Length: 176
Image (cartoon, rainbow, N blue to C red; front, side, top):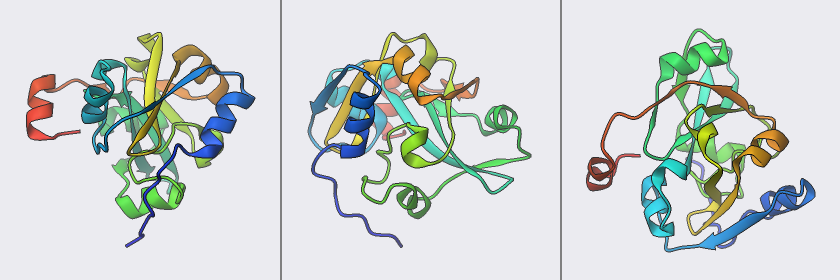
């Protein structure tokens, strides 16, 4: 099992990337959280504007990151079609950690240039003016202009997010 050292600050290459691409951002520090919905609540942000980043592997053996609203789940069948692969499966913690070892597991920033894998974004995320996502730590997030992030990160759009449960049900049961 890969062991990460807990990130005690935002991931410096993320901040450098945002600044070099002239994307204004707000950096937020919050109590330690583990799920996207929990982080949105800690930030006082609507979970529908907090981007949950999920790691996947396609049948061709290639990894990717998938961005959906914190309150949504990834429909792997629809994602498979968006990626153009025969099947797609979620990555485990060790595989996620290997993508960016300096980030806490589950807090990868959705920037293809940093993670060296493509990033797919669900259409529901694309309706938000601003989005928040983890900044490589269970304690930090960034809030950015969604259109600027999408343009500069060169993400791939698709439809694969499914809103299956109420937000209260997700929070009570700890689902992500």
